[in-house]
Length: 156
Image 1 (cartoon, rainbow, N blue to C red):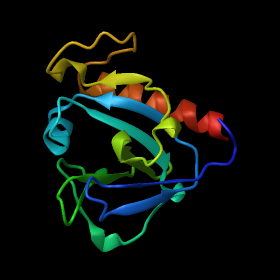
Image 2 (cartoon, rainbow, N blue to C red):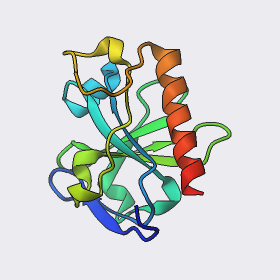
Image 3 (cartoon, rainbow, N blue to C red):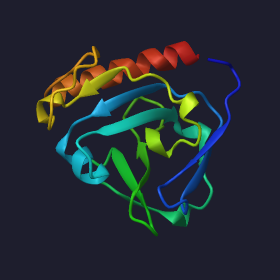
Image 4 (tube, helix red, strand yellow):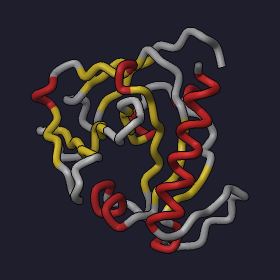
């Protein structure tokens, strides 16, 4: 990927808009029950960025809510259409991250290939894509964290 990166994105209706000025770190598929409910889909296709690289045009266009304690992950829905817009992840000892549904990115060509599946034990259907698949809370969180840290090291 090139050093220069600039794209935009938005929720499904276009009310919640954001700009992205940094490279995506990692993309993956989450099959957890919360992601299934939040995305109204069998799994979440997500792309992760440094929070410093994502600017929400209007903070009031997104309503953030934690679905599980501790509230490390704030899931944001558009205040107009109610669809997923962006999520904010603040894990101890890690830089702040933003998780964006991959479909919300304006240029599909800039979406990196997926790296893994997490919470695969909650899948609604088998996926035969050759990607690593992790089940259970600890294994899923550990491998997602490892993928994110590796991507951060590559990004510099």
